[in-house]
Length: 303
Image 1 (cartoon, rainbow, N blue to C red):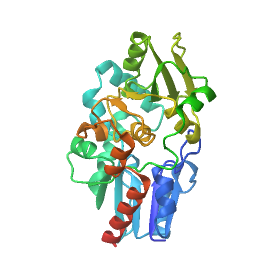
Image 2: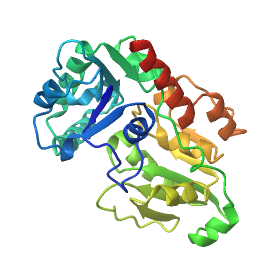
Image 3: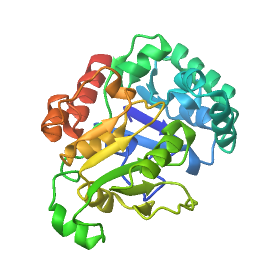
């Protein structure tokens, strides 16, 4: 085994969808992956018995001890630093409570992340913006999008299929009701923009009760349905206070849907013309094939 990937989950938890981790595991030579959520043994003990040449792991897991000679690549894709500075205090407290429902407090997870970064041989960040927030030099490789799945489709047919008004300007929001995602701002827009119709695709386990007539909510949909819902829209909207990359907006672009988003993640220093969003995404190298190519080159350089 040359390469080992470690993350809490390898495939997505919403609909068992492909993720960065599963795509990398399937496309790097002599590569295996471990989902800690399903792993019963002690991971460091396992590594002592089965040392890879290169370990790639999520920085939020904290530092992982490895035998001498194993090179460690930490993935930086959760911007806890920005959350501490950009979220209003009340929303920051709410976000901290939500995070505590997972593993560890907000501050504890940030500390673990920084320890992992400090002890890694290399850090790969998903955008230049998140690397700047952490004040580190990192290899920048965005998470690539499946441009075959997320592609332009027949808008009229799909609006009929999902019972979306044909004669309305349709906006789509993909995300959750988490304060980091700017859910409070999205709700205000919906209330204000009564002439527009909104598609809301949420990954929350519980759906919020909204008394809006200009909204249709979808919950935890498979990726193929998500791609079709993008194509029902005229505009993707996002009001996130913090994003590390912003995959949903990029997926919309590959469907050739213009986007209207806050300047965070990859959009912190990338300004779009929105005339041909799909081509702009290709030009930026945000497709899956480009990501795999960059990772393959990086691995060769570390050998």
